[in-house]
Length: 217
Ligand SMILES: *Cc1c(COP(=O)(O)O)cnc(C)c1O
Image (cartoon, rainbow, N blue to C red):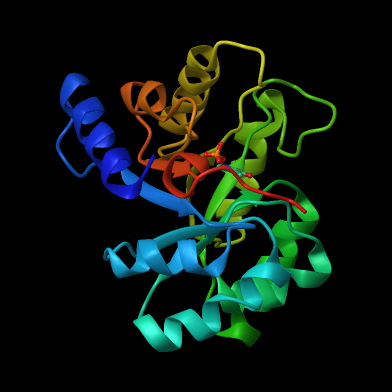
């Protein structure tokens, strides 16, 4: 359980899959983790992190960036429309574009903010009631709408159901990305990032395997 261990597992998975070293980027998911654990990973030179909440990220990353220099921070959790502007100012990438209202809000705010983070469309591959993301059936139409609005959509993201073989979900996400000419695939977490790399992940989102278990109290 550490950064170096995770990085070496990623490298082996890339090599086993016949993929070039470095073709998978590691997002170190620092949500809820104590600051000293986050600093330890920064001190080892890692510069790509993921957060689930705008508020939590806003309380952490402006200071850490001032101290450590440029750090790429990705938003991985659901985004309320009224926090879109703050998210656009804070994050380098947003993995949870999941509805037309958010897409039109990003498009409208891009001029005012002066930039738009890289965007991933979240797809609810397991058709789970409680999970965000566009349905598999709506994905092509929604991606086309976002591209039509001029949004910088670079890829797709999914979170497979806990109790299912993630392979089918990763393969489905890869297929939707390919037919929409999107090159980035955000898939795979601590429990399944090696499987995701085999299925073509270009970003894996790993938290507990790097930082240790999250404590919510
Ligand atoms: C928390 C979270 C992760 C990391 O989960 P681990 O199991 O700790 O690796 C990845 N992706 C999303 C969307 C998350 O919310």
